[in-house]
Length: 542
Image (cartoon, rainbow, N blue to C red; front, side):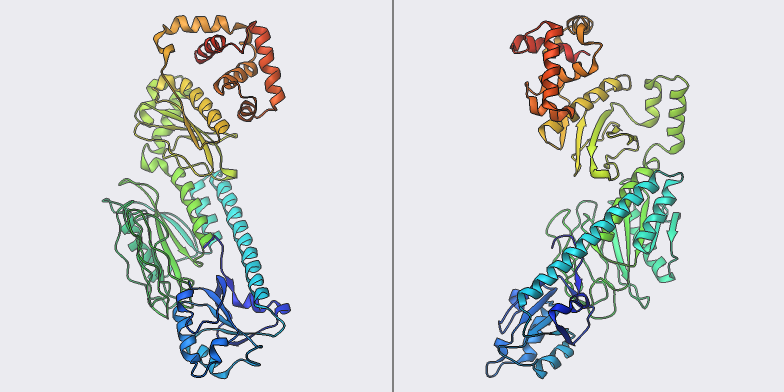
């Protein structure tokens, strides 16, 4: 199912032009889609959550049983039944209405002038409007969270925004289970106890799962916790057949599912089949995961010292999960000192640099060499990508990050990355230039990640002699960084005018003018392969 909330039956009934009338059942039923059937047994053709439309053709036969038809539709997870009067029936059969009332299946009368296609179109329009509303809610929340992360005292600020946007409670817990920071409404004793159990599961030292969830029913009953899966290797638990909020895991590898107790529930999907695969969520229905308080604990780290984010959610919608995931990334970055070098150590490194210490002396405080520099662009205004390091500079249009030894840059959805070769503390400036060039190459090639390509014949030449030759050859261009950079990118892209223009963010005619100017100043034929190679080797030395 695409991202987007279901539509409540009451919203469809409110469309006066359709002339729909509720005959029996709860108008709060949630509709995910529409299906039309005149089959005597609709069960094999339903996925769950449908508004099942029928004109009652199958009920007009002698010996037809409305009770069995309704029972099978309810067992399949249908959200509601729409009955079209005419051409078969003039009114809704009383036996059908009674059966729907017994099985808790809402029954809607569709008047003669309303086609089933019009009803389906109305549902899809309502779903599209609801999806747009939820997307805006997620986007607004992400902006608010990013703004909070830039304020003084960012961790409490992010938690406060998160709790407000989710209408619940948000807290960070230390590895020993103590509360590190919190915001939002208070928890009931039952909620606090259940959340503490989830935090303990996530924070345990061996094979930490990435998340755990539970549901506290409206009356305070807490569902039994499920078993924990290992990090990256657990399978989702199946939904429960009876219980408020029975559900599978939230899609995290190794997550824990818990099932509540209470009113009627609906069956969930099967458990995930392999490592890192979460089970399908519980099917929609009157007793699905929309009741009770949802409790979730997310791991913010992979080591013994990692913090845990605990949430108590009033709503259980996908948009809420996306908002929580955004906050989780931000909090992971903001609390990264707890997962490696602490804040005092980072402050000491900064002070030493400002007072004149060489990078080689300061770098060991922040991590082990060699270091890798990563440049990233994209994200559409979202928080910086989670690269597994607290050393991130997100100012300006390019995010720059330093990865210590043992950390490998991986592609990030929505971002374009350029990655340098591993470098020692004294070569970080060169590595920064490598990452910048790799990023431009990635953007020109429309790929998510490009790495610096080192080595080659120039490694056989004495560095001092190579540097002197490069300065002499490129001397006429040294006072014009724009010409140097244009020539570098143009040569790296094999003289491609359009790709060079894309990489530099200028018009292709500007590229042509700059390259022509380079040829004039260098008094060189840039169409000659030998000339291009010499210039390329020289540019690599700058």
